[in-house]
Image (cartoon, rainbow, N blue to C red):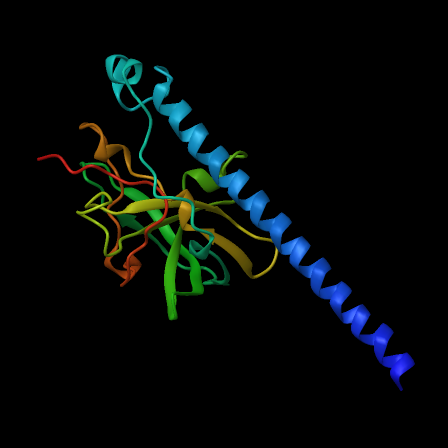
Length: 208
């Protein structure tokens, strides 16, 4: 029995080490992906051709303030598609209305709480080649008006092949309206509120 037990436990230990190594590699890849997202967002705001800050603001833009990367706010959820849901006019901060539909419900757990929130699809973007699989996930949480923008934040998602979908709050960004007037930014629906503090993603210094 002892001769069999030794290789058996050695094999379990090997699997444990291999599993830890894979998890560590996945974590490093996730952090690298988040950092890349942050750098690209900063680059967009520095580029005078794409920045919502205008030419002067883009020139003097010093970079966004982000919460520290926290992989506890990167969760794997399930996307429950709501087939043939009707389009509706989503309110914005301006006169323009966005034609959206609830593409599905995101089911996930975060800090011991279970959530089931709508994710949206644009009637305009779904007809384009570049954004045909784009999903819009706006949300509010308990940091709004303090560390983050009072109007809430957005996350870009994409239609997955199956039900599983990664929701990374470290990639949450602010609407243009947080930085400049003249934009019609989608107002976060009340159904998209998270009753906890999402200390991940972009921060915002409230104007006094």
